[in-house]
Length: 259
Image 1: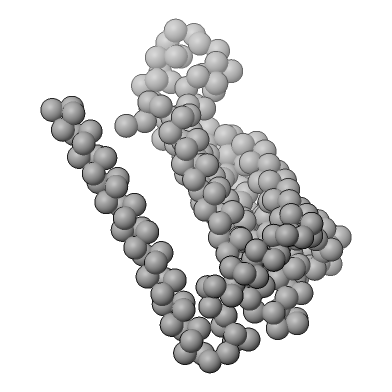
Image 2 (image 1 turned 180 degrees about the horizontal axis):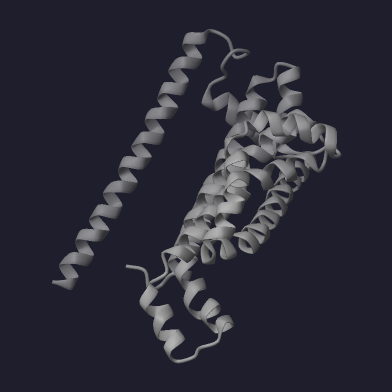
């Protein structure tokens, strides 16, 4: 019975991979058709021209420098957002009054258009700091909400039993609350990183630092280098997909008890 179930899961996994690959091929065919229909590489270059441009870009040091700088900005924004989210999300989950106090702030940050934040950040910060600030403000509300939700959904019987046996508050937090919020935290990280990664690049496009994916995309657009804009877009998509894969793999390793 177990062998049959394993084989069924493997067949389903293989089938899903074939479907995903077919979808990618279909998108590439549609891209090529639209490129031919446009009648000009200056409007929409085909997949082959874009890959040639990407290969040429990958042969320069500026490509890797800009990629690394953008990654570092994204990681710094995420680290700051996670630190603040833990500092506010845990108390918010434990205390309804504190949660009510910070709820308007979370709502404001989640509802404010990104472009408004960027325009203000351009006044308040140096150009290199703007993408980090935008990434932080985009990811912080999502992480804080998920952490507080995870705390509130902790099994009450566990807490009651711990209180009954006089377990210390620090141990309850470490051994009951933190494992409980892990699924919520991983889900929040997955969502926050997706939004944050795009926001960092948007911040680079508008703030125009010396290095960064967004800065080079803006330069390419200024000179009507459409193939370079699309090539950088593909790079951003690949990096975002890599983040999603790493988070998914990390979830399987960290949350081993989750069904």
